[in-house]
Length: 121
Image (cartoon, rainbow, N blue to C red; front, side, top):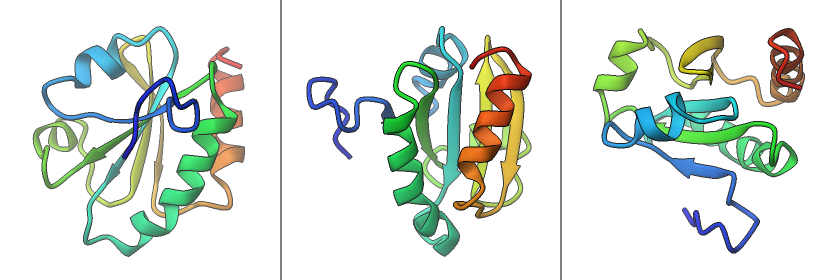
């Protein structure tokens, strides 16, 4: 996945792991939605193109992170992630919303509701 800020296309979509989760997610000045996924998960693969497209639409309002739950099991365990895909929105270091299961057609609506409810819109 290309994360070079110079490209503009995926600058708002990045991967995180145990080594940089706190810095890139919990300490972010903008809200961050984290996609907990795995390579073996078909619903995760179905969600990926929608997630990537939305990351472009929310540039400057919401950051989009992806965390491979198999490669970084400690973070999903910490946040009690039990099913994949699970999307968690963090703001000011705390969880403000959680969406479980594949909901590509509803994801934009859920994000918009969350941002308005928490004064992030």
